[in-house]
Amino acid sequence: MADKRIYSAPGDRIETKHPVTVNRYRGYTRLNHWVTAACMIVLLISGLSFFHPSLFFLTGLFGGGQATRWLHPIVGLVLVASFLLLFAQMWKLNLPRREDVEWSRKFGDLLQGNEESLPELGKYNAGQKMVFWGMSGLIVVLVTTGIMIWEQYFPDLVSIPVRRIAVAVHALAALFTILIFIVHVYAAIWTRGTIRAMTRGTVTGGWAFRHHRKWLRELAGRQGSDPSK
Image 1: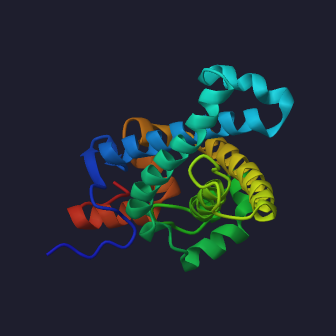
Image 2: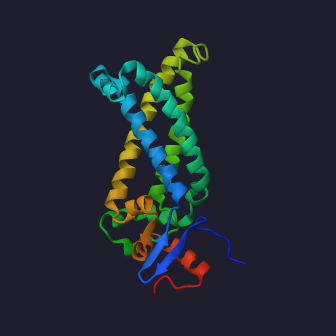
Image 3: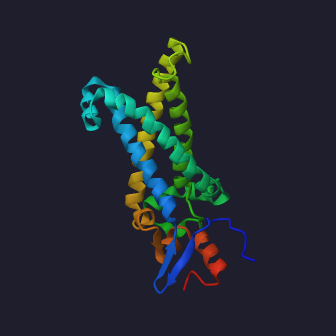
């Protein structure tokens, strides 16, 4: 009987050994991720078009103001459904662990490229976990306040003063979402080999050994091989 998974998800496995290639994300997980990302981009652009009159021209990308007002909340609901599927697959491996504290303390070493001083990690590091939980919380705020200000279907759900507060909270949450989204994309580009995981589903053995050694060790242990070879 195989050992219990602690740092890996079902489907994670070492694909080839010469050179080592490791499966990090299955096909439907990648599709789920890109649907969520596409929804996020549409929501950010359409939301910005209503944020200030000078940005209203962005509604032209979606067929005008009326079409954008209809599209924005609908895509928001698609995002919630898609993110819930992603959340169900990833929440467990994003729970905080003791090594995350040490990793955070040595963040300066990470920026300087001294990764040999960092602790061994499972599938996700503390930064990735903060992005995951930050996005999770903000999406809850965005969908809650979004329904409160969705006058077409919920005109009497809340009073006008409460709706005004919801608009402000919705805009503030959207701003933080944009910041986290930028950090997420920048980190994926900055750490070479990361984007491949979400496009091809695999990473190299060297990438896995350098950035997520506990994850690789667990996979190697399950498959009876040595990750350092």
